[in-house]
Image 1 (cartoon, rainbow, N blue to C red):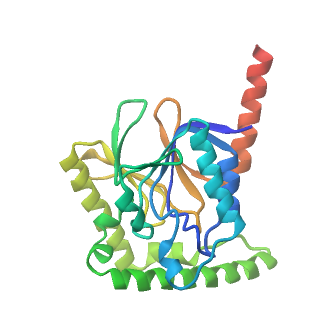
Image 2: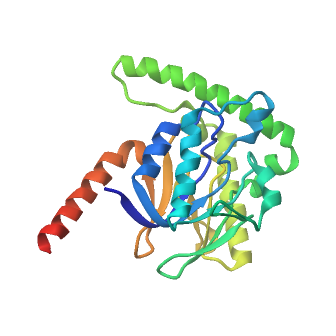
Length: 265
């Protein structure tokens, strides 16, 4: 029994890489419905195609599911990121039910307006040193591989999943400073664009928080580690779904809700 949301944002799935948690993403797409689905960049990792083609059937299943949702009436908006920036030249076109846009303005049910962007345009490293950004992307994938083997060992010992990269994001001073500066720049952009907040991806860290000028910052996270999505409910409330930890609870609650409604009828 599918969960229904007014809007869903997913980003940084990095299809085409071994780091993509494609099985979990497919499970998420199979169990949710929405009026509008935003693909907020780095959906297909074209950078990895430089070093070799990797495209298992599971990744193709995900693309097919997204196109099926579009065919069935879901409005799908694709906002390319830096890893799939080649699609930016097709902005303004409509392909297999999917609208490709450089950015979008989303209005929630309660009337708030959000600028939706991938977020790399506000990252000085990506903007001014693409070769360094590419090296950083390669290093991150190596870190994911090491993290995967590390957690296999932890699992055999009875320990829960632990993310080394997430730990570094919160502990390394330069990275923490970057995240703070990133939100500061986005708050200035929100003020300049006269919107209530910004929804983005790019930095692989799901979060909803208040920025300067009373603006709201929303990041949809990623599907290489955290398996998170940003969702809007029927009244306009925004929240983050952590699919790995919450999927069973959310689906059980939906079954109980539907059962209660059926009994009341």
